Length: 290
Length: 185
Image (cartoon, rainbow over all chains, first blue to last red; front, side):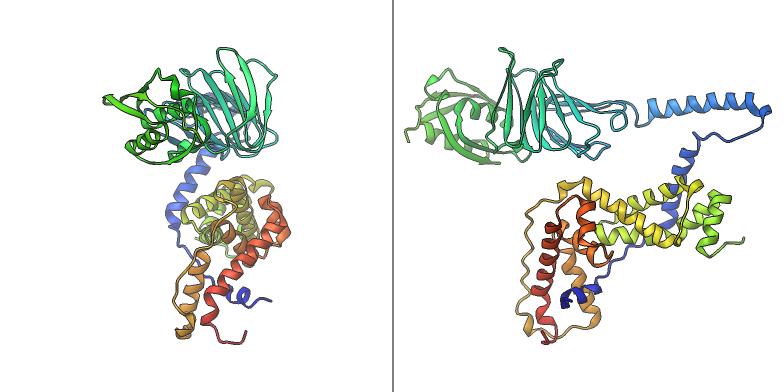
């Protein structure tokens, strides 16, 4: 027997709970549970029982539907706000800015369905018997248990799902045929062409927005610009076809905007000219020949 | 007021006068259950929540409760199972490649042999510094005496992972305690 196994027996850990407070909490819980119980009784009590039952049912409905936690839950984020939500099944949803998540009334009992508008990263608790279903504006995603990112903003031309681990099924709404994604895959729905395409994902930025971290490997400038605009809350004006189709490797880890501009200006010999508080014009530039 | 003291009598009472029975059981064993969960989870809030669930389950099952052994091991088993389920469902805290903390304790050989009490504190401290997954697995194996197989199955991880985490924990203890022990190794 390992000596250190032996001496690790000295590990001491204790926590003195407030038993009175804990008991009161517990008592409330069992009392709440008892309200719904039917107690056997004589025939003569039946009419009263019916009246009590109706009253109890009414109180129960009132509590659960209007005051309690069985109503539909609704979460929303505004500009530059993210929110982490733990669902009753233990799954964790991190909601990106300007997004909403609706959790159905019977989530966790009859189904595991949520409705998403915008972008969120999902870490879904595994349950083989009950798939987790996300209905977004343009796509539907079905999983058993895994982590992945869904991006489906109403004002963007594309919707995408990228998988970090596990298996995910993606389909356009009201269609059962879809594509099956595995770790590292990306599904892209082009909203104009109504085409659902499966391709290998970049794999670097799945959920990267959660840490304000962006990694681009051979990424088109158009994509880089789009992500920067979203994360830094700025607008770029450019009709500059010189650089929009260039591609570039870089990563940003919470740098401030001026550093980001510096890096891009050096890379593409362009200039970011500030027009107002949040608008910049991108002037000049050319693709980097390397 | 008469209060039965043996577990057998309390379980009987739970069936005859449930409200009184559950209160007795709760008051007698709540701290015990909390501490079992606390030792594994190192989180007192979580420990109290899980303990509440353990007693609530007992309450729901009271009509057809058949406790063959005595109440204490039954509650202990229920607490461990609930804790394991909690960690199984939250793999998120179980990042696979956690680094052990590196401690600079100076040259341990230079230090005096510690008093027993100090030693206890030191060991507790070291174990609490293990990454969560490593710590949970080690505690389950060391104090709850669960087999590797059992831990692996309950947490839905491989036997190999369990084995690795336990040797990782022991290695960490060895490295940080070696100097404090008599040189009989």
